[in-house]
Image 1 (tube, rainbow, N blue to C red):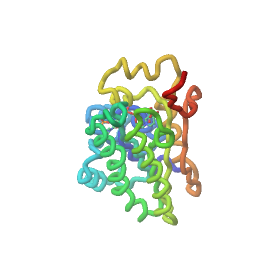
Image 2 (image 1 turned 90 degrees about the vertical axis):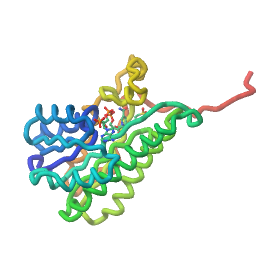
Image 3 (image 1 turned 90 degrees about the horizontal axis):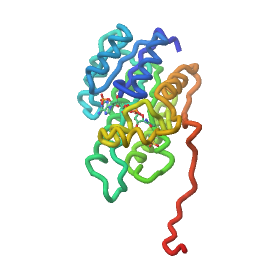
Image 4 (image 1 turned 30 degrees about the vertical axis):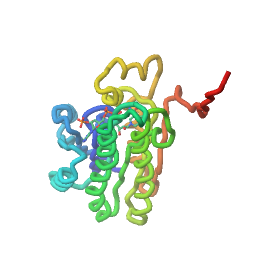
Length: 256
Ligand code: NDP
Ligand code: 8X3
């Protein structure tokens, strides 16, 4: 990758993995478009990182806004080489029979539909130019179930399978696709959002342990994008060393 000649669009760039990814590519010399809803956050990132970072206010759930934003980029940023579909969220950790249906809608609208809209808008230019890279941010929750993961994990399973299917569709075009699937990660607003701003509850998720941080995930995204053009990294699954797998749970109603 000739980084100075590379234009990267990162969604969910106002915090966490997205902001760290903007920093990683920007400090390597790339042109970076930082997209998110919170204008003040992305404007601050652009002001800090310089004129090669463009703040793009965007709600990925709005297909018309996505289409207009991607097709209306200023000339210098118009040819997207790397799309990092990172915008996403989890809402709630209740079991399915007690969940708030609006939480499920928000996750599907953002994690699945928003990612679809951005991909659909960016791909024609990549295919026409004969190169490009879509990096989707999935999660270990897309591969391994856990109580309360219900729709969140299902949206990330979508991201995983959509990424693999994109590879099939893009066969022979020169456009690459990677799914980056992190485990427990702090230094982001993920748990604060999941628990509706309950910071104590959010902090407890990471208490007394060393999770991944946003820079770890940004490095994985950057590494995948930095491989030579003939190398496609399909999937990267990364976890903190302190996280691993538990046995299946078995309900024993008559246990003594
Ligand atoms: P953060 O909450 O810190 O970041 C989420 C980002 O997504 C924010 O910048 C937010 O910006 C943006 N976003 C949310 N909704 C929209 C929307 N409708 N339109 C545009 N942007 C939106 O969390 P993380 O950095 O942790 O999460 C980033 C991704 O990583 C998510 O897809 C998440 O599912 C995934 N992930 C997180 C893990 C973790 O443990 N932290 C582990 C594995 C995967 P704004 O509100 O300004 O729009
Ligand atoms: C976030 C990781 O395990 O909290 O995708 O679902 S987890």
